[in-house]
Every structure is written in structure tokens, then in C-alpha cells.
Image (cartoon, rainbow, N blue to C red; front, side, top):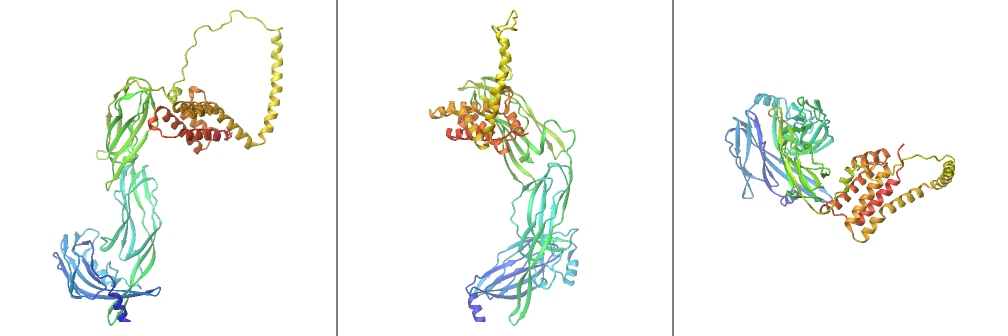
Length: 596
């Protein structure tokens, strides 16, 4: 059996590596273990470590393992040479290469560096370390203290939530770090309930958890992995708490056997449930009074404006932009209020943030674009504006003046947009000329017209009764009524647009489709033409009982038609697709019953 194991191990990969902490505390003992896998070594030579005294070693530990899976045997072996050192002063320890002979060849480990930290209030130095050893406590990177019969306590492994600051202002970033501290190797780690961050906006900082750091807590050393790191932006003042999280963890312990070949160690896993602490941050309110131009920016920012294109023409699309750069809650900054001249047809703004975390906050820029279409030629003044932010360094509000500019619009081809015309139809011209005023009154009592006014209401009532009975019979079939009414409206309002589409008249098609939609919505919602706007339509559709999805489809269809008509370079939709969508929207709106 031994010959079989040796024969198999010859084909396994041979490696010579080192296991050591990356950080230690001055005055504390630490282990450096050189591991030779799948080979037998001779003439091991440990490197000298200037700045550290060798306390013990090398201690040789040999282990073998063998598995039988699906009729196949695999095995591995290792020789571990453990050295114990003591750091004498703060700084960096440069560890050279260790050597060992394997089958006549010399193998080397890679050199590395250990950082020695000065002892602080949380470290009690070597005295407590020696006391811990006398009490038989668990030590990280020391399998001899990690036997399988030992209970794993909250002092051996725990999760801690750490906040970078105990107190911040509203919208000021605070770094939240969730760390795993363990004296055992971890084979599996699974969050079952993540901490909650109520009252915060969260920006994740990309991390790759790994147990590659060593920290000292209360005089004891732990391997540490950062599980989660994020920026938190508090949205309200007061005391905000990050709740604890729950985790399922598998740690590795060792069963040890003494044989004629040395001490054998068999790793075994133990399942645990670990709960983190809670963390609290005090959030200070921003100072009062807040300037009127303050929109929530907290940090350090600059702002500029930009116009594209520089040379404007009537009925041609253009964009006015605010570019805000800086560090702080950049992704959540709102632009100053834009007061565009009334001769411009302005559309909804588009916000494009470009920011990345810099460790303790976010840095980047956000661009707010305002698309607009000039409706008249001439020179128009865009007034100056202000942008205010709260400076965390001075703890005061800082205001940046944004200069105004003159918009020089040249004559272009096209016609005023329907959107602009509807918004400016609230004042009508006074009628002039012959008003057909009647100068002398005359009486109709006794004439035939006098009696006709008595007969007409009776005839009208009879006709209404007949019509009402007919409608009752038809309304018994609800599906037929909806289909018939929707089809009738769609055909009547979109028939002319369909003719333009058949003739390939793109401008006529979109103009007629847009007029049909505005006219239909005016009739459907009983909104006078002078008061017709997108905002009114959204409100009345909701009051009517139209669901949010259909309201969004209606608004998107209006925007598509306007862009296609007045800014064709921005539009790419097909006329057939637009016509089908218009007919579908009208049909869907017709099927909605008015909310009582």
C-alpha cells in the first residue's frame, strides 16, 4: 500500500511555498512555515530575517492523505518546516528564499516582505501572547492549536462592521467596511442575511475577498478578509443604524495522528453560524437657512455650460448642457434651474453621470442636457444662473455664478412645432369687421317659429329615447362596443395619415399623426385646446383611470412624433411602426372606462 501511494505521488505536482503573515505587531511572536508538497526534501535551509530574532525551528511536520473516488486513487503529501520569530522593531522585514533539495535538485521559495506595526492601545504585547499560549488558546496559522475537539468561540472568528467616521453631514460620504476576523482557515462563507442600510444611498466599492491581511485585536492576531466595502450617503439627519448580518461559515480544524512516519494531520470542517455587530452613525443636518439655489450638492464642485451647435437655426435641434465636476455626491447632484427664452421649444432634460469611487468618496462629472428647438430667428438672452453646494472643508455654502449668454438664431427651414403652437394658443385675436348686430328688435310670439320651439323639444326627446334604446341593446355586447368604437375613432383620425404614409410623404404623415393625437386627447379628456399640454394630459389620464404603462406609451408616442417632425435627424422610427402604435394607443384608450 505504501509503495502504491509513493508511486502515485510521483505524478502529482511538486511545489515549495511559504505561509506567513503580511503584518505583525512589534514584540509579538509569529510563524513562518515553508511547505514542500508531493516530495521528500533534504538539507532544508531557512533564510535569515534581519530585524527579527529566531525563537524556534525548524520544526518538521509531515502529512499524507489518500482518497478513493469512482475507482480512482489519488494521494498527496507535504512536509512543513515551521519557524517561530519575534519582531524587534517597527518597519519592514525582508524575508529571503528558503532552499531544500529534492532528488538532487535545489528548490527555492519566493522572497517576500512582512510589515511590522508599532504596538498600540489594542495590543498588549508578548506577555499576553505567552499567557494565551499557556492557557492553550487558538493561534492563527498554527494547526497544532486548532484541534478538532476544540470548541470554536466568538473570540476565534467574528464579523465586524466598521464605519470610517462616527459623525457626518447629510449627503456626506461615509465608508462602511464589513470584515471577517478568523484564527482558522475558512473553507466556505455564505451570507444568509445581509446588513440593511436604511436611510442611505449605497455605492459599492468592488472588492475580491481574500484572507491576505493580519490584524491584531486585543493582543491577538487574526487573518482578515474584507467582505464588503461601500460608500454610504445619508439622506436624512439623526441617528442611522446599519443592522447586523448573519453568515454560515465552515472552518478547518485538524485531527492529528502519530505514526512511525511522523505526525499526520487530517483536516476536518466544522459548520458555524456567525452574526455581525451593528453600527451607528450620527447624521448632522445641513445648516439653515439653505440658499434658494442649493439643490443638494455636498462636496467640492465646479460647473460650466455648453451649447451645441454654436450656430443655431430655427426648427433645428440644439442642446444646452450643464457640466458639473468634482468630488462628493456627484451622481445625485441636481442641475440649476434653466430659464430658457419662451421662443424656444424645450424638451425634458437628460442626465448622464460619469463617476467612480476614490476610496473615501466619488469623483467625476455629471452632464445635464436640455434639448430644445428654436422657433424664431433673432437674438435671445439666456439669463445668468447660480449653482450652490455645501463645502465640507469650510462647512459653508459656496455659490458659483453661471454667466448668461446670447442665443443668435438664424432663419432655417421648417415650421413651428405643434408642441410650441399648442402651448401658445391661450390668447386669441379680437374679431373685427361687420359684427351683424341687430339694431331693432322684433317679436316672434304668434308666428310659426314660436310654436316650432314647442315642437322641437318633443321631437328631440322622442329621438333621444329611440337612440338610447338602440344603444342599450348594443352595449350588452361590451367587447363589440369597445372594438367598434376604437376602430371607428382610429380610422377617422388616422385615415389621412395613412394616405400620407402610402405616398411616402414623411413630413405630412408625422404632422397629421401628431395633430390627430392632440385632437383625440383633447376630445377624450375634455381639455380645451388652450390648456392642452403634456403635464395636463398626464394628470387627466390618471384621473380618467388609465394605468401607468398606457400613460407612458401615450407620452412616448407624442415625443416620437414631435422629434420625427421637427428634429428628423434625431428620429429613426418607421412610419408603419408609428401608425400601428398610434392606432394601438387610441384603441387601448378607448377601452378604458372612466374612473368614478
